[in-house]
View 1 (cartoon, rainbow, N blue to C red):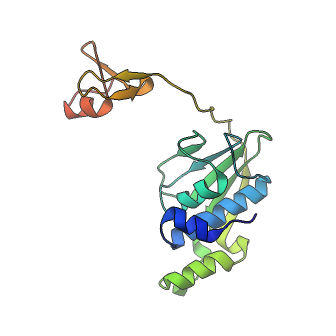
View 2 (view 1 turned 60 degrees about the horizontal axis):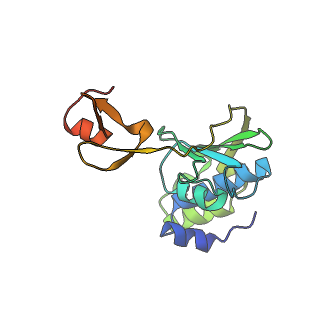
Length: 178
């Protein structure tokens, strides 16, 4: 898979180890699944962190929050799971933290170079997984919060004392979750 690394760096804003990690993890997973960049929702990615590497994941895979094919689970792990809708195949890719030479971590440019050039097996581990097909993105109606007047996705509106209010307004008033 050919990726213009410089364009990915421009998308992210700078070169860093996290971006290089996301690059290696995403390319390895997509190669494993024999997938190309997702134009719509053909490929789904589940990320277990919200670090720099997720920008590489989005840039390379085409999985984005806006298309509904990027799912965030806040586990704080350097791990992604990819699911190919057409084949039903899934793969979980994890950073091999223990394989990173300790001395290299302090040398940022050297660390990035190592991440980009080391053998795939040194950088990541891949495991085929079976997961339930994630739901496709839905277009939902918006309702107006009767406190702030802003539009809110219907599934995120709260009903308090017969009024439709958004989560921030509910929280600001100290009202209980419904």
